Structure formats: structure tokens, C-alpha cells
Image 1 (tube, rainbow, N blue to C red):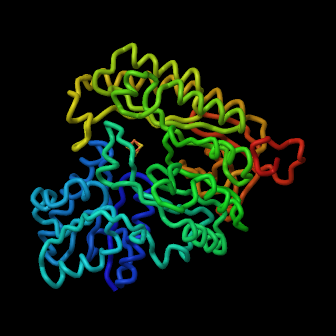
Image 2 (cartoon, rainbow, N blue to C red):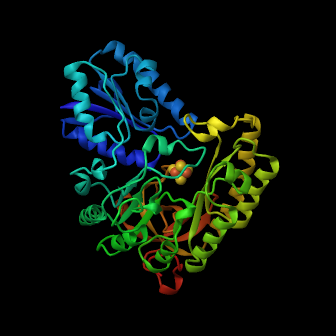
Length: 454
Ligand code: SF4
């Protein structure tokens, strides 16, 4: 038996990829370890969506240099988005690195590791594949470990947002065959999974590039029909692909959770145009209005970038106005950082000083904190179902779960409830979470219209 130390950076897609890396290498007799000192193989699964994430990878690699000096036989590899972006250049920058594998090459990892061991070369595998079979793994459908599972349904993106490196590191859109996705979810349900999160860089354009394949709304309907599955979520989506069919799915599919993450990025049309997002604010708001008309309880979260090149105070103020108007339940906000190979990095100077970026980010986040606190307080007194995920972050004897609208609820309760759907009465609220108490048997009249118990 050999030991694998695997460190994951970035998004849920990378988490899923890391689970697959562990399974693929498990078949080569590698067992995961938390102790890097004893590892035979050290792999970093990396993120390059922002400069900060990329820098974390280089500092992690810096820490492993000394291990390699002491133990020359340890194999160190980098995979994921930084690997895809940098390729050969990573080997030059990090002379003690043994291998590089891109986002489409996890299935080739055993071969790549073997090359290091037998041929003593430093392989770099960063090919992109159009055939979706590279995303399949025989053990995907039989993995166990909890009531909640991520399921990759597609990878890549055909959009051309000027700030975004994703199309460069994940390639063009490739969708998995729907029958394989459905079979995987059925198998997960048979293993006790009750909630699935369908994953991809642009899930709501699922199937569009595959002749004869069903669309995303139909895929949701097929997953909705699977016995045992009680909740369906997905991430992430592009506003242009929030189709009338998908809006109808929110009204009709009882297992589809009332939450949509719909990245807007900016509230200013001129910034959206420089970002090449492909919609105006009016388009975006119109789609949201139609969604809310069909599913009034839907919670909306979004991504926002502040300090995009040339962003004026007036353009930034439009984003603040957007927050007031939409009243997002949650936002993920970032300062702009130029990414290699992107149109924005080539066309525009990164001309907003760091101090102004940070100050805008603080104003944005303060405004959102107030909005989220008000929205969360409105839930006090309601009874909602949470899927218990584990211990609360504070580790104060509380358990933590999420409502269908994706709000975090902390409540006192035994750890044995992990994986259970539990009704809780909401007793308090902060800007980022709710406080609740197990509601036990509740009268139907007490139930919030959003909960499964409604
Ligand atoms: S849609 Fe999303 S993943 Fe695709 S280019 Fe735009 S920001 Fe990047």
C-alpha cells in the first residue's frame, strides 16, 4: 500500500475531480493520507480563477521542496486549472515537480505516475477531449459517503466573458450522456443519497452542443423522477441560458430546490459589455422577474466582480443599486484580477488601484450584509426542513444543515442526525446563517411554504 496526499483548491468541480483522483489512484493501491511527510505521492488539484488562488498553489509547492530534498523518491504532481494553464512552464518554474496533468486527464493519472516511476521523465498531459467518455469512471455510481452527492453533468464553457479563464482551462462545453447521468443518480439513491448537486461550468446549457441530447430542463425532470432523491440543486448557470423551460421546471418539479445561483457580475450595462457577458441588465432582471413570478419562494445568489478595468464610481454605484433592487439572498464578491490568456487582460489595463477595489468591495459587502440579515430575519418563526450535513463550524455542540433555499441553519441536535431531513423552527438569524431548534412533530399549519413539509 502506498500513501497519497491530495490537496484541493477551488470550486466544487475540483472537489469532485479530487474524489475521482482518489478513486483512480485507489485502484493503483494508493490510500489517502493527511500527513504529507509520509506520502509517496503528493498531488495538488489547483484553481486559477483568480490570481490569489494561483499564488496559493505556488506557496504550497514551496513547502514541499524540502520534503523532496529529503526524500528524492516522493512524487510531486500538479493537476487542475493551474496545470492546464501553465503546462510545461510549471516544470521550468518548479524544478522538483515530477508531473503535470490537465483538467481532462484524470483518467490517465495511473499511466502518468508510472511514467515517472519507470521512465524517469517528467510527463505533461494537458490534452482536451471532445468525447465525454473522459468524464466517466466505473466507480462514480457506487461511491458512498453521505446523503449528498455532486454529479458532474458537463464541463467547459462556450461563452467568451472577457475576464474569465475557465474556457481556457476547462475547454469547450462537453456534456455527459443523459442516460449515464440518470444511471449514476439512480445508483447514488440506492446508496442512500437524497440530495444531488448537478455540476458544470455552465450547467444550464447542458446538451446544447450534442446533437440528439435532451436539454437541461428535461434532464432535471428525469432526475426528479428518480425514487429516493428528495432534493436537486445545480451550479453554475449563465443568465442567457435561464430558459422558459428551466423557469417552468422551478414551478413544476417538486424536488428542485428553490435556489438559483445566477452570476450577474456587474449592475452596469457598460461594464457588462466590456465583460462580454452577452446580456444587458434589463435582460437579466426580466429573466429574474419571470422566474420569481413562477416560483415566488426562490432564493437568488450571485457573483460580482468589483474594480473591472475602467469601472467608474457611477458604474460601481449601479451595482449597489442592483443589490437594493434584487435583494439577493447571498453574493460571492471579488476584486478583479487579470488572468492570463483572457481578452480583458489583453485589451485593458488593470487601472483601478487596489485601494479603490478593496474600498468598493467593502461597501458592496456591507450593503449585502444588511440585505441578507433582513431577509434571514423574515424566516424567524418558520419551520423549515434542513438536510443535516455535520457539526456546526463553531463546534459548539450544534449541527448544521441547509434549507431548500440553501440557507445554513445551526441547531442543537445529536450528530446521529447527519444525513437526515430534519424539521427545525427558526429562532434567530445572522447575515450568513439561521439559528434553529428541532421542531419534532409539527402541525401542517406551522410549516413554511418553502419546506418539504409544506
Ligand atoms: S459563462 Fe462563466 S465560465 Fe463561461 S466564460 Fe463566462 S464566467 Fe467563465
